[in-house]
Length: 415
Image (cartoon, rainbow, N blue to C red; front, side, top):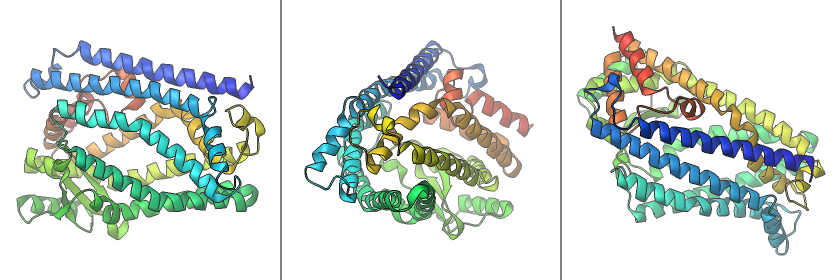
């Protein structure tokens, strides 16, 4: 057995066992506290709502654990099981093995198979778990229509981009990884600009926020914060789910503020204003740009690593591939990288939680901290978000601070 095969298997075992251990801790921790509302939320969250959140969280956690196990089987099947080599050989009997069409066909096949494996989980999550807890409003027809749109967009946008990447890898010499990084960064920027105006409207209806008290309050907040946007929009998220949220999207002249219709229907005007102030805090503190720069930096390091691995015969042989190619190298690297980077996840989550605290502090200065705290309590309740996550699981995965700590900080700022 090759040394890198051993490294791969050890990383797979460590990552998978840690994921399952964290899921088990989280499920047990939440279930053990199911029958008692935390003291900080007594009078605001009913025991019934607290139990619903615990059951909802537990159901999602165990489904995620099963998904983890299946993903391990799929990964082993593609690599040491010879699945990737089988796909490459099958297309090689039809297309030139060294051509761009062959590489694109292999990548598309792997993406398609992976999507088919994920589909039952997505169906169960939507029509079993989400429906069971009263969140799903999506019909099977709408689900399939969304899926068809995603496939169409992926084909129209993704395939040309894959061709571009394979061409750069083949033509740009030893520094191909740098050119690929530039292309990848540019692609991400274009998608971020195009998404709010071209892609999102394919899935939801965005209506201008009507004139009234809410619009007046928001425009006053924007003026106070010095934020200019292309418009205020309400999204018909209730077509698919009863979960509520708000966000701003786009850059430059394309910036727009989006409120879920479910959010507007549940929160009082000062609470909506406070939630939006939190989102503006992310903009003011340049959190999106900071995260993008971090992502771009990490991707540059990873592509440099792939630039070295692509010429190493052992990289292919140790992962079940006999006939190396740029497309196969790219797929193998994408498959293996999450095993190596998994244990960096707590740092990424911590960075995100620090941003959430900064956005909360910004909202407390430009709106009412107590209103934001009350809005969050309602969102925790209505979205069935657990108030008692396992601390270690939360440290690994949660992009937002625990509810108890977050509300306590806001109330302290209010005083």
